[in-house]
Length: 56
Image 1 (cartoon, helix red, strand yellow):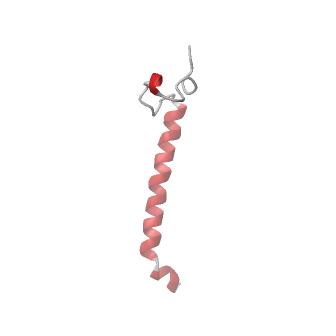
Image 2 (cartoon, rainbow, N blue to C red):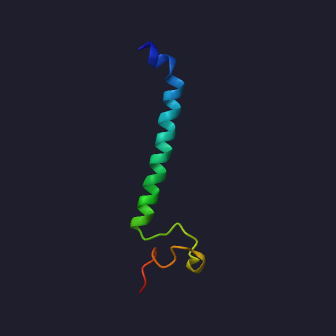
Image 3 (cartoon, rainbow, N blue to C red):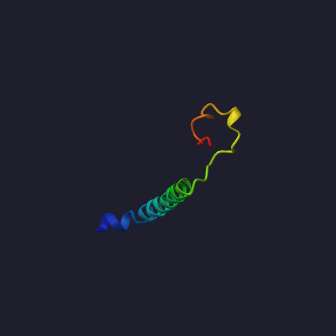
């Protein structure tokens, strides 16, 4: 129990950071499922230009 009390600040920061990362990942997954792209859309200058967007 004393170890927990000694490290409570570190634990709180770690949990906060984990929550922020979790929210960021959830937003990225939600956007990916909605078909949104995180790139700028300038595929002609991108090395992966032909592989990340579906062609109609």
